[in-house]
Structure formats: C-alpha cells, structure tokens
Image 1 (cartoon, each protein chain N blue to C red):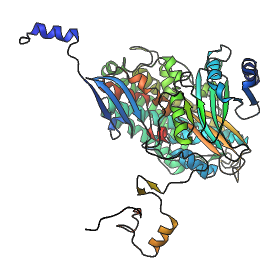
Image 2 (cartoon, rainbow over the protein chains, first blue to last red; image 1 turned 30 degrees about the vertical axis):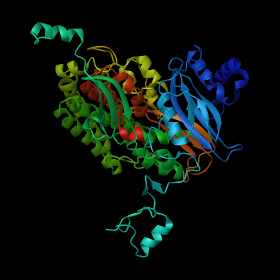
Image 3 (cartoon, helix red, strand yellow; image 1 turned 90 degrees about the vertical axis):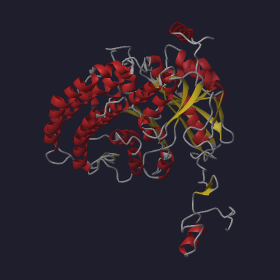
Image 4 (tube, chains in turn brown, blue; image 1 turned 45 degrees about the vertical axis):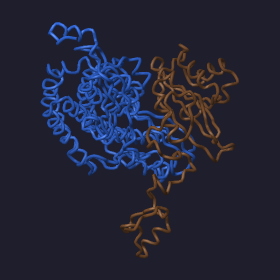
Length: 192
Length: 390
C-alpha cells in the first residue's frame, strides 16, 4: 500500500484520533493522539492489509521553539510482508511528557523506549523496565533536550571547569592538588 | 541417610534433589569475550543461565548530541566512530540520508566507488566477526589468519584515503579521494587470492570443521518471529532463514545493477537460526561481496572518470524536512532519522543501530543456555559496542 492508502485505512478505523498527516514528507507520517497510540500500534501490526510487523526506529524529538512547545515520539514502521513503510507520531507537552508503551506489540520497543526516557525524559506508561539505558543510573537530567546544560558536578566531582576557574589557573593559582584538579570548593579537606 | 552407594547417588541425581542455589554472575565489562565493554548480569543455576540482563552504555559518547552541534560534514567523523570495525558502512549510510534529503544524485562513477568500498569493507568486517568468533569459542589460529586477510583490504583503503580504520571517506555528495592509479589491479590481485585460497580455506578450516559444527550448530537458536519483533537485521536475520537484504529489496547506490545472491541460513547441521547459521551466512556473504567487487571493478575499467568532488555542495544545507533512511551495513540495517530545520547543523539525528536492536533480544536468546554458550551467542550476534552505545 502507498502512504495515502495507509493513512486512509488508519483514518477509517480511528477517525478523530488520527489528528493530521503529512504524505509529502521524506518519510510520510500520521500524527496520532497520545492516548490512542497503543491501540493504533496494535492495529497496525494485526491488520492483514497493513501488517507492520517491524518497528524500524523509535525516536524522541524535542521542539521547544514550536508553538506550543512540544516533544514528539516518532515510530517508523515497516512491513516485511508488504514491504511498505509508514511513520506514526505522537505530540507531547514538554512538561512531564508521557505516552503509553508499545513494547507488547514490538519487542524492540522496550530498549528504544528506555533510550527515549534516558535521553529525553519521556515516560512510557506501562513499560516493564523503565530504567536508564545508556547513561549511568545516578545521572541527573536528560541530555538530548534542547535546553540541556552540561552539569558542573557529577557525584561531587567537578567535571567542567568554570570560566572563573580557568582564569584562576591561567593566573598561576593552584586549585586543589594539581593545576587542573577541579576540586569542588564546597568540599572540606582536612589539613593534616 | 546412610553413606551413599553408587545406586542411591544416581537416583538422587535423577530425582533432581541435588538442586543448587541461584547465583548472580557478572560477566564484563572487562571481559575479553564480550567484544568491548558490555556487562552481562547472569542469574545462573549451576551452569545454566536462568535469566540474563545486559547493561550497556559504558562507551556512550552521545553521538546524537554531538551531531546537533556540528555541521553535516562534521558529523561524518563521529559516524565513523560508531561501528569502528566497519566505518565505511556508517558514513555511507549518513551520506545517503543527507543526499536524499537534499536531492543530490551522484554520478555512476562515484556510486561505483562507494559500492566497491562498502563491499570491501564488508569482507574485512566479516573477517573480523568470524575470526574473533573462533577465538571466543577456543580456536586461536583462525583469528590470526583472518586478521591477516583483513589487513590486505585495509592496505587498499590506506592507499586510497590515508586511513586504516576511520576513513571519513564518504562525503555528502561524493567521496574524499579518487581511486589511485593501479587500484583496480591491486584489488583484483587481492580478490584472486581471496577467491582461490582464503575463502576455500576458511570454509574447510573453520566452517565445515567437525569441531566447529558440533560446538555451535544447536546453540542460540533465534526463531524468525523473534528476529522480526526484536528487529534483528543483516546476517542475524538471514541466519534465521529470511532472505531480506536492503541491497536487493530497496537498492541504493546502483546495487540493482549488480548480480549477487542473498545467502540464507539453511540449517545444514541443526535447527535454522543457530549460531552456526549466522556465521555461515557471514562467510557466504564474503563470497557474494567478492562477486560484487569484481563487477564494480569491471565497471570502473570501462567507465570514464569524473571528478569525485563534483557534486559536493559548498555548504551542506538541506531544506526543512525530515527523513528516515536505512542502508545495509555489514552488521545489519543501519538507519538514520535526520530532522533538518533548514540550518547548517542537523536539528536531530537518531541512529538505529543494528547491534543495539540485536542486543535487545539477547535476554530471550540466552535463557536456558550454558554459560560457555552465552559466549558463543554474543559472538554470533557480532556486536560492536561502539555502535550500541554511540
């Protein structure tokens, strides 16, 4: 099926819950209402005419400058039987984004969703194992958000020299033990 | 109970009253057989693995964040460093994605060079995959032989672009260097040796070796449904018996003009989809790649040279839009989702790494295996941690 027919099949079944579609894009997509995504995903896999048995890719995207500011989760689907592909999108608010999981439909979604949680902070409700996957468990924040700031401290260690610290080192001052030992100023070191 | 006689000892064992406690075993991250820094948490009952949980991320560099902060040509060296065993495949995938977004059509000459390089890289990459695999399961010598043969391919790459591992060879709109004079002849020499000596030797010495077959022909069987649901691609998918190859199904760079076959796991020695099938598919693919390289060299001899930088844009600035494009890298389908806001930096780059998705099925495949077979399983999936962690 071509993208138009797939869009029509989805619109026929789900009506209002398919809010819009772009068939001219490089990879055509339909925007699905957040609460309907699990149902739409299950339909896409089970319906014999669509038969999207393969989730090629699941990505989060952050759009803080759009009005209203939003996050998107994009599901790129492919059918091994019919060799057609299509994409679904859900649009989420940037504050506390949450979307139902699709891991019961495609097994690979489990890890892709963990990655989206890790790097974007998108919560997949109903997910069986919502832990960080790429970053350490004690990491704070979600780096692929557009408003991400590199942290100065990680576990009490200075990971990024501030401009002031660089100036002080360049003026010959010794901070901590070596010239570039960025010991946090708030750490109390006992003098022997 | 009285002292055990041989008879009672046997009956105790058979009735299963000699249970052992479950033990959690950490394999890695510094384990030589995990192909990099992968940590596996195994819940074992004696030698049997009851549950496995992979922990990844030790090599994470946040490639996707880097990509948002450099321009498109600047992404290329980072893309090289994802799958560092097959760097040509990564840059080819990203270059094709951006070209598709910008609507650049390359000359047949440059396309042929790209196919040539991608297939030589596939031979080199599979040589490493099979070589390290034999080392994982206890045979050291084949590893040295295969790395020797890979060196010869790397010599060709070095001659062409100066780098042996991370090439930055495929650019958006072209390739960095034209082929040097005499390349065709040198490549033919290499292939002659590969076809007549190396490949038959590889089949005789390893693949159809009785010890090798008996060791892995029944281990780590991946059914096709699991492979599709967990998005296993490339040799892992074809090992499960599905003849799906993007070079055939959705050809790019002129692959439709080459004649080659798609090897599929046939289960000669056991169930389809075992570790043996995945390795057999890789070795058979090396032969098919050699065929493609032969045809590409034939074409190059007849073809008129064009400037390889002819279509390289002065500023790579794709129009506003988004695209998802996949290409067949040696380890499977490598997908790039690129969102452009019309600027010189990508707005968002997401990589679908074939090793990442293969690893997501690992806990299904490892359940019920012996610990030594887990090693055999990881090697047969042919993962590169640089690409899983990005």
